[in-house]
Length: 147
Image 1 (cartoon, rainbow, N blue to C red):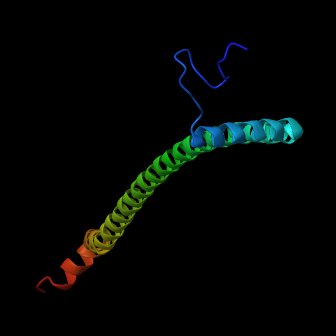
Image 2: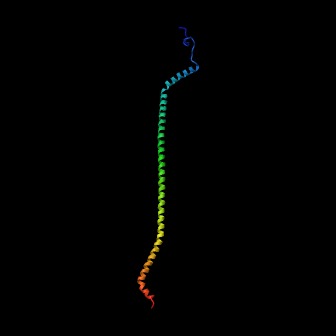
Image 3: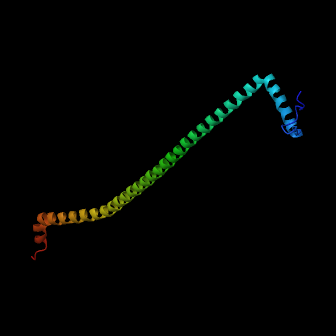
């Protein structure tokens, strides 16, 4: 032997691992053995984690897509409701205009009916007086003539 112990450096100083490093190294050696013994379980857990990440990404994509569809459908529904309300207001306006026309027609009829009756009566009187004077005129003039 050359006189150096395995724990001595080039200058003859002792070196050693500190206690926390020894514990860490011991833990890593134990962990390495544990992983070798149960590697198939770690593989299953790894696949499960990968599947979970893929599933989460897929669900988030589907949720975003469905949210966009719902937003579009809500906008379309609001547009259709506004259009229906507009048509309802137009229909009500036309209905009011129709009622106004009907009322004007009824008022015109109610005014024209008595006026027409008066006109017919006056015409009848005129016709009767003209006819009476033509037929009865000579007879009336003789009866009213002085003797």
